[in-house]
Structure formats: C-alpha cells, structure tokens
Length: 337
Image (cartoon, rainbow, N blue to C red; front, side, top):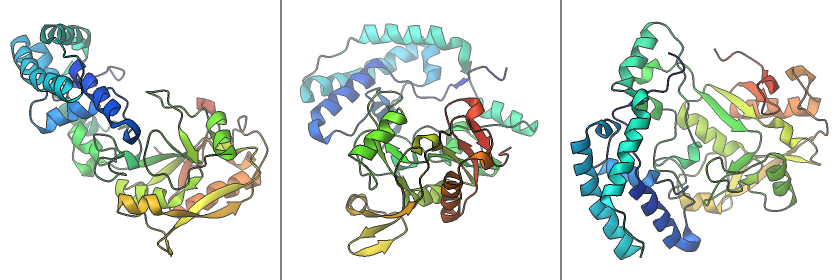
C-alpha cells in the first residue's frame, strides 16, 4: 500500500526520559540556549551513538525492552536529579508507556524498510525521500553548535533508507524566496526591524513544531551555494514568492565581507559566519498580488527577473515556484519527474 506508514525495526525510539533531559538541558543553558524543540531528539541520538538506544524492534520484545529502559533510565535520572535539579522518572511508568507505544504502532512495523525500497526501485517505481530541516542545521556541516542532532543533507537519505548513493537521480533543493531561521545561531541577512516583521507576519513564519517566531531576512545566495554544493542539488523549488509582494525594495545577498575582504564561499568556521557582513544587490520590487497567478509568464516582470537572477547566480535551474500554500499555487517551470 503506497499510503502505508512503514517504520524500520532499526529506528531509534524517543522515550519520556529523553524529552525530560532535553528540556532540562535547554533550561540550564539560559541565554545560551540552542533552540532545541525539547522533544528528546538530541538525547535519543546520544543513546544511539553510545550503543544503548531502544530500537523500534525492541518495543515488541518486552523482556529486552524493560532491561534496556532500566539501564538507560539510571543514567538519565542521575543527570536529571544531580545536575539539573529535576524530578526523576519512574521506570515502571516509562515501561508501560513504551508498551502502549508498541500497541499503537504495531500496524506500521516493517522489519526491513531497505528491502521494501530496493524492491520498489527494481520495479522502476518512483521513490521520493523527503528531508527535514535546513542544511545549516546539519550536525556535521551546519552552524555548529546551533544545529540539530542528525544529518539533514541529502546524502543522509541513503543512510537512513539503506540504499546506495547511485540510486539517487535528482536532488530538489527547497528554499524560500527569503531566508528564515528558528532558534539561536548566526544569521548574516537577518532583518530585525520593519521589513523583518513584514516578512514574518505575511509569511506566517512560526516554527512548525514549537510555534516559535521565525527570524526573517533577505535571501542569502552565499548560504544557498553552499547548500547546493554539499547536497548535490540538481534543481531548486523557490517557495513563498508571494510574500515579497508590496515591499518598496528587494535585496539579495550575493557575497559577504569578512575581515575586510569580499568572499562568495560560505565560511567554514562558525566564528567567521558570525562576523560576516552581507553584501547586497537591490532588485526592482513589485506590488501585485501573486496568489492567483497560475503561469510563470503571468508574473510581474520584476518577479520573473528576481527568480531568473537567483537561478543565474546559483547556476542551478529553478523548476518550481510557489505563490501560496495551495497545490494550485505551484508554478511548474519544468517537470522534476
């Protein structure tokens, strides 16, 4: 069934003690907080790396599950009590919650999702891998330490799905027509005053998980070139072009100034990113409402020039442009299939 959710036995399970530890750490950081969602993702990845994670397959073996929870919760409770002054969690309660999770998720169990995907590919079916979160939140290649706990770049799809890299034929990079960021971390093109508020309110920029207000700024071609390089992006989907309608001026960051020099490659050092000053090119704005446009050529000339300028600078085709959240508000410049 193409609509059936399948969960691999190898997937890592997030349990209540992961969430409580995550929230306690963030609270303890105070003003230096990372901006984590508090959902327990980081601590769960730590368990994976230290080879003591509860895997999805463990949920269906109660004896093994209880032993793993007992071993892990000792450490988590020690940290919660001694380091973060938080209440400990009850082992039996967590075990019961895990069993309830198993019952609810049992219909979605798939012992080997890699095999299922491989069979689909051999049958010449189209397989789409969707990544979560932005490139600069990648654990290895993002703005460390203001990153998530996993790899967010395209290559991680092969690892997570269990297929070889030669199976990937296209990589579609999805970016907004401006730049946003949730939580802390460097953001060279951030707009903190009137224009930033305009983008935030018109674009309804709130974090999908936390509901936090997203920080907004002009589109950053330096960061986008970096994303294209490390993801192997072959084409781009440019979203939310309609949000830019009504601005007096539209700017594009085409380079940075760092220590008195102009650079066009994204800095490798997190400290350098924080010091980088954006260099802008001003482009003509437009006032028309784009949300009813159904063909790219019907966009205002300034909007078309904006899209074409970005594509030219990135040396990557923009095949999709959105002018609203609806499916019928997606403009196809070229088929991605």
